[in-house]
Image (cartoon, rainbow, N blue to C red):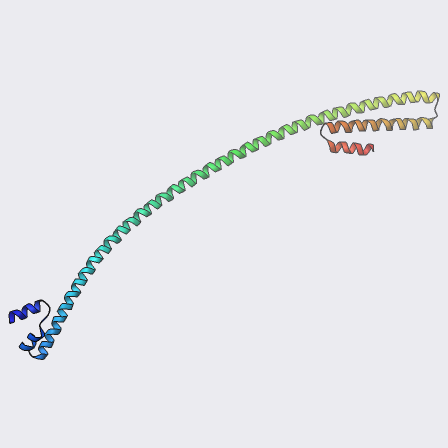
Length: 202
C-alpha cells in the first residue's frame, strides 16, 4: 500500500479512497492540496521553460533585427555619402558652366560695344565732314550770289530790292541744304536728327 501511495504521489495524484482509508480526513485533505500544488508547480515549471525557450528565440530574432538595422544604416550612410558627392559634383559643374557662360556673354557684349562705338565714330566723322563740306559749298554759293547780286544791283536794283532778293535766295539755299541733310541723316541711321532738320525746314 505504501508503494502504491508513493507511485500515486509521484504521478501527482492520490486516490481519494486510498487516502481516506489510510489517513485521517484532515491529513488526507492536506495531502491532496499538497499534491495539487506540486502538480501546479510542475505545470508552472514547464511554462517557465517554454517561456525561456521563447525568450531565447526572441533574443535571437532581436539580435538578427539589430544586425539587419545596422547593415541598413551602413547602406543608408553610404547612399547619403554618394548623394552628397553627386550633389557636390553637380554644383561644381553648374557653377563652372555658369561662369564660362557669363565670361562668353561679357566677351560678346564687349565686342559688340566696341564695334558699335567704332561704327558710331565713323558715321559721326562722315557726317561732320559732309556737314563741313556742305557749309563750305553753301558759303561759296552764298558769296557768289552776293557778288552777282551786287553786280546786278548796281545795274538794275535798289538796295532794298537787293536785300529782299538776297534774303529769299539765302532762305531757299538753306531750305535745300536742310532737306539734303535730313535725307543723308535718314540714310545713315539718324532719323531723330533728320526729323529736327525737317521741322526747321517746315
